[in-house]
Image (tube, rainbow, N blue to C red):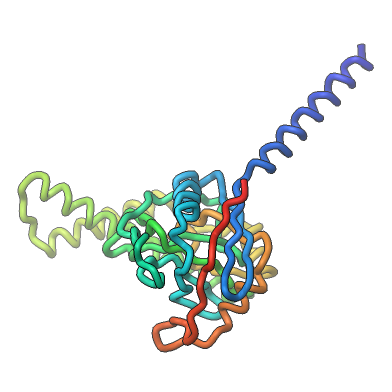
Length: 265
């Protein structure tokens, strides 16, 4: 009986391992060919809306020819603006995607995330339909991380205030009311404070702290933007793009373009 049980348990383990391997093989990857070299990324199944949208754009050829229009060394490289294409026939970036912010996906070095409009005009934190960035980042020490946690707390307060303000205004508009602006702002402050109290202080997970202290990244963006993938190969290309000369608007002096994005399934 014990021998049979051991065999059954062993078979079960094999099935589980095989299942995990099969799942890994099915993960979607994308090869981003640029004028500086190739970057291989994986797309997360935890963000299906962003994953499927990226696949759709890549397969339509939308990204072919767009530039890296915003580059900041030790921070990130951003691309996906359809207006930077030499051929604007496929210009179709006037839409957003609902946020899919997942706590297990954070802004470590090599993270791929969606750009978006700021909280003041986009309290729901919806992502740009086409623009994304790849994190280069930097390595943080304990003092850097302590300051970053304070910054994240401040950003949370601002986000909750902007969201409360938008909700109150929407409710008033639905009722046909025109509230006093000072009163409206005071109510938003109260709601934001209550939400902060309910959420409690921000605590950065230990594994994330260790990652930022060894690999690096941009921790102050955590929880505010949708991370939907990561670089598997080609961080040397990301570093090369991040190190290029830029003008006062963070645009590379010499155009750096995506040549083609190929989806690998």
